[in-house]
Image 1 (cartoon, helix red, strand yellow):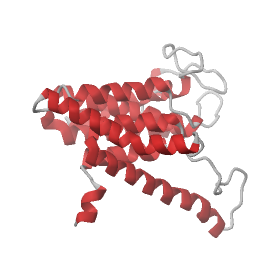
Image 2 (image 1 turned 180 degrees about the vertical axis):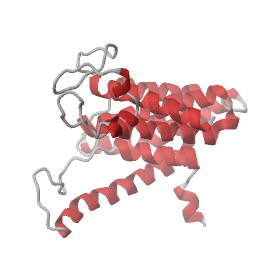
Image 3 (image 1 turned 90 degrees about the vertical axis):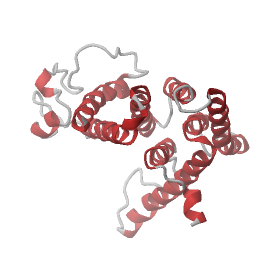
Length: 258
């Protein structure tokens, strides 16, 4: 079953690539896929997740132009996330598993889209928030207690980022990050929500420092190199920390308590 879920994730990941590349471009999500360079319509055997990319050496069979590594990476990451979600929540019931698989798909789209465009589309983040509220109806225990804990968790997690956004007037981070944090808290609750927020800042600081210092240490200066004033998308760090908290039940606060 784990293998089946992984393969399903690969297939869904292929569709997510279409969503990422076509969303807000005016192009329909339907229709045949084709090469961006020569326009060649791709056959089914050229669209097999990960496999086609490897067999073709990462190039178009028509014109030989390079195919972005985004395609296999998104497909494999989605397959891996699907397998992890299923392994963690297999005993939670089909509805919750399906909900978390949809969440994983949304977060893949948000991550890659933010990396490409440095913006989080409202449609995706609002769907994430809606699913966070919906989760309360399928958790064990009292529905009213679950709804109350869900809403408090979302507001408490979003509040620190909202204050940073308000004080800086949007210079330090975008309001999309605030909405994303709201969704994280709806799923995780107050304690794990704030923990994932703290972890996201740590990850962002570590990666940010590495992007600035490593090229200097290697004495490799190139156009577009990162510096102290460079804009670094924060959503990927929020999402990675959220997935760590959700799938591994990791809590930074517990680490300090020990």
